[in-house]
Amino acid sequence: MSNNVFMKNVRDLRYREMYENDKLRNRVVANLIYELPKRGRGTPDDDKSKVQPSAEMIRISQFAASTPTTLWFEDAYQLDAIVLCGRVTACYNLIEHVQKRLKEDVAEPNNANDTSSVPELEALRSRLFVIWQSLEEEVSQFPIESLGAADSRQWLQ
Image 1 (cartoon, rainbow, N blue to C red):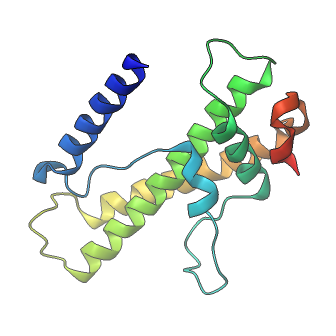
Image 2: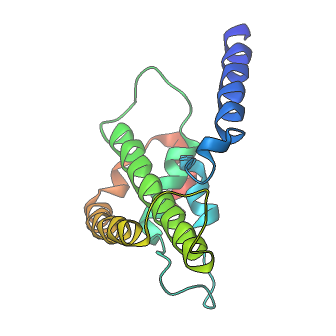
């Protein structure tokens, strides 16, 4: 228990250090695998340039979020699902972050807090969309039904 409490304190200190640093403002992006189902839900009125996670991406994310910390996995696809979820979540978060920065740069072109240019951000966004499309294909081919650990079946419903 003391290790668990200690590690949470260390993590909280590191997070605070990053998020309160003015030099890192607008450059820190969290990548929490359990956030994708919450953040990925859109409404029909949302910006059309926003990517939307597929139902399969949401399912894999729910599985990954429900997987307890472990020293080994019970079946062959558990680790693959968690890694794939991390990749999807990272790409999603980066696309959102870049689009937010582009909106800010267009609204305030002389923003002194940012040294990056709009063309560089647009090029990065284009590369991220290509990666997103490849992740959509990879997720569609992932054998979701293989994630059949008895205690994890509830997330498939």
